[in-house]
Length: 429
Ligand SMILES: Nc1nc2c(ncn2[C@@H]2O[C@H](COP(=O)(O)OP(=O)(O)OP(=O)(O)O)[C@@H](O)[C@H]2O)c(=O)[nH]1
Ligand SMILES: [Mg+2]
Image 1: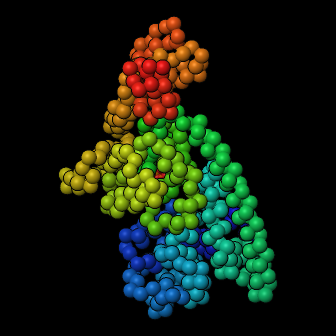
Image 2 (image 1 turned 45 degrees about the vertical axis):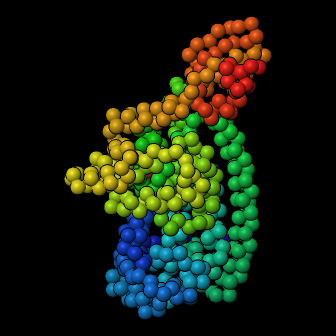
């Protein structure tokens, strides 16, 4: 059976480090593939960029191009793995593997490998394992030889392999069912957790992978979420308090990074994590302003937000890593990128504090002052008012307590304060 811990990558050869050759249609995405692979600690031996004029149904790239790749890889001293930086069907992958006579993965396979290595929490692990097995299932026949090599055996007897594949296929299907069930119960826990945060104002940090979301969250909230110069360092939604003393409390939520051409099955498996974004009251769109691809990365993020039906949400765009922009030209380019955006470095305490104030002001501006008379028997409501609103004056009266308070519109609706408002629609109660 394929263990969840087994890598999608073939075992390293006796050279110690895994040698990889890449082939893809665009230089930009190949650059990104280089970074994805370096996150995985492999050695890039050969890289080839070739536009695809017409996709070949069976092999994606034409035979000539694939043979050229093989020759170039051989000339570079041979490789352990070929990465084709597109989305391949299981059949295309198998055919290419035959032509190249070596293990092949596509973009989704590489991203999945990173996700499996970076998953930390039970939820992330379950989501990633499910996505991985869904990827593996239709590819078992050809991936099987990778795993077989990892188990220490040779590719071995063909007949034996096919029988094993059948057994593995059944086991993988059963495991997928188990994981789906587990995810359902984790999702239920999440819904409960989220509803316990109903009364909080939520700011979600979203953006392209490696933009600096976790670093900024740490700086904004003085916490220590793992931030690393790695793609997809964060796979979970981490919640931290931004201002515990405000009424209502404001929290910031770190989220999984986005990337161009992320496999849709992966987005689906991160559904519950991404729902945090849909429920946020404010989005902080973090952009790495020092990246030469900042514009494209912003667009990718906006597209994903659209898919999550969040495009209309109130958003503050943050151009991060400004400290890396050395020339006036570079700084100007950042300005043009998003004219109204906050430009800062997550390392500059004062700039981060100014952003924090801006976030809190955003919520304060949405506050309105109202006067209510809450009957004494509404015990819970008195506590909720103290927690979620900022009370400016209070006075015990005959029928209840009079409050003058500042409260956010959405929160006032949640508590249905209109029922008790003085001078308002429901004030004559
Ligand atoms: N120079 C500079 N580096 C930064 C800044 N903010 C973050 N970084 C670095 O950028 C890298 C990525 O930061 P993270 O905070 O892990 O990025 P992320 O957006 O959370 O990335 P994922 O979780 O992988 O999606 C780390 O090495 C940070 O130290 C900044 O303002 N200036
Ligand atoms: Mg992160």
